[in-house]
Length: 306
Image 1 (cartoon, rainbow, N blue to C red):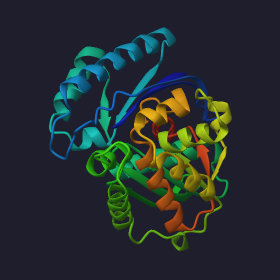
Image 2: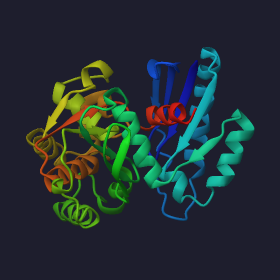
Image 3: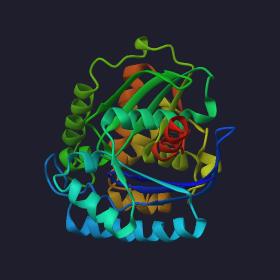
Image 4: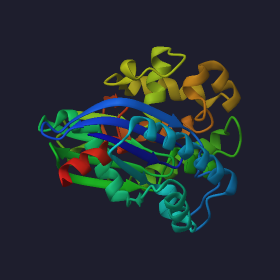
């Protein structure tokens, strides 16, 4: 059985085509696609996703529709997260997507997003150890803890790389005061989070911020999933990378690190700051980086439900 899983995020839209062995409950990746339309640009709670972003989203979904048809997928799962959660025109867009592509978009809550992130990042580790998942998105950040498929803690925080950048970092490169204000907001929203709450065997960071930082650390000029999956970022790595990019404009970041940051060059600083602050608050010396996430979690949830 072949399944397509689309993750419509605040910054990215991702497509996974996977072959599923139902009996063994195994997921074999056939194809991964990603685009960065940033549908959450300028979006605030109760506002509308803007027309240019809607047009970009539909262009991407058109591309993905053709890929899905080419692979003759048996099932299509479409998940939408924070941008769709807070937009006033969300149901209008859900109807348009259904009408044009016959995709059933599932807008998931912050807690559901946390669960999908956990399932996606740990499906290869089922039953092995106690896992902490950190998912830094464009509009929200999820922290999840569990063992096997049993989740004992999950929470979605209203901080994200895109939203935080738009709210606090008004200059390019940002002013020191802007960075300080962002740091204060991150700490306030993460108040109470501590490693003492958990006994962690493995801490895993997923989504665009940690995968991009892993690319930069390894000196990659283009994204290489095999090199990134399972790689390690230490707190020293994070601090060094944050120091490097905090003085650069988004144009200079793109020039220095090339295509691995394209589409994230103006938000990577905020994402890095969020990851650094989580690691510091939780006393984490390092995290393992995973390219897996919500799109994989949607498939795992499908398998668990069938």
